[in-house]
Image (cartoon, rainbow, N blue to C red; front, side, top):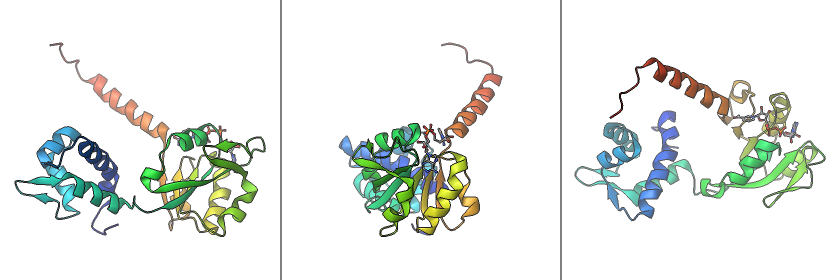
Length: 217
Ligand code: NAI
């Protein structure tokens, strides 16, 4: 990642990427920051500021070359690289994540799935057979995956993370409620908390309800 790109900008990149891909699919060759901002619900200056981090794509009076910007954002996110990922916890959430996530388009391949429950071991998720968690070291040591996806309960996470970090795993897509970054500052963890998102919605609807209702047109 370029050292000039801040994490808030990085967090907006996937959305730019998605919009640019849709534009490309609709045959759009170039777009002004004003037009892109209207479509994305951001201000034009925000877009200019964000995309200026990558330099050279916006030209006064021309706008952005959609394909060039799309490819550059993909390159910055490292999407073209092939990285292996494993999933730990093949319960309801783990199965949903592994079935519905298009790993390949994000530069990942799901190569291993692990669970502690003997009833799940040997079953298949997509093309991957669920292995006993006791096989974790044997599977990972020769070829440590870049990323582990954690869909296990919080109580189980510390021991699993310790083993994975010892195996050289440096990225976590963390659905467990264990705070990995606090204990392992040397790794990167993206935490997904659907509950936090729902609480944020709660706050926002609360605020909305304080405002007088808009009269109907
Ligand atoms: P689940 O009970 O269906 O699946 C958990 C799976 O983890 C089970 O198959 C279990 O055998 C396995 N497991 C437990 N300890 C393990 C270990 N040491 N090694 C390997 N596998 C192990 O539960 P569900 O619904 O899939 O949720 C999983 C966890 O994710 C829950 O603890 C829940 O709190 C959390 N969760 C987080 C969400 C989020 O937004 N971050 C949303 C929903 C659930």
